[in-house]
Length: 264
Image (cartoon, rainbow, N blue to C red):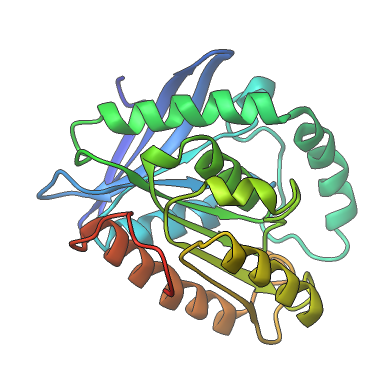
């Protein structure tokens, strides 16, 4: 699939690509090392605000560690990026109007569409010459974290690692999580999950025999990884990288790729 745009900055190449899906064509942003390869693939689901500068920066940062990172426009059925126009910073004043546009898009993205799209994204990654063979890692943020979980549940054999941040990971209940075979990290915002709810979630993960860590990041609000919102936490973003990078390293470059169970 030809790139619409390509750029190389600080040893990371970025492109805008088109992904064929059952319902049309999804545009996507890709970032990967400019040299070497092939590289392990990462499917990065954006939060509900979609692809924008902060997501491109995060994808490029992850790519700089030696990964091919694909960020799809999950709302492509409503048009290419940007699906909605966003202010440079989403604060308390801007949030109601922005969410008023985003929530109907989220509501239309039902489980079957999520599954079909995930299959297309994973197939696309598997066909890229820059991506090494084998399962990929999946990371997701906010609503994108739920999409990441659904993808890992639907295609366990294609997923070597799963990470979700400030995400409603148990929105479909905890039973489907038992399908996942990859090691997991869930990083919860302190405003999203009580210690009691965390205890219940982790008990369900343990009962299913899942290789996991699941923790509340101290003093964080929903959306803490997103630098363009009032919820942003520098400490929370750092903790996110401190958890995500070792998980991917172990799962995608370790000797026991994606097959471990036990304690992470």
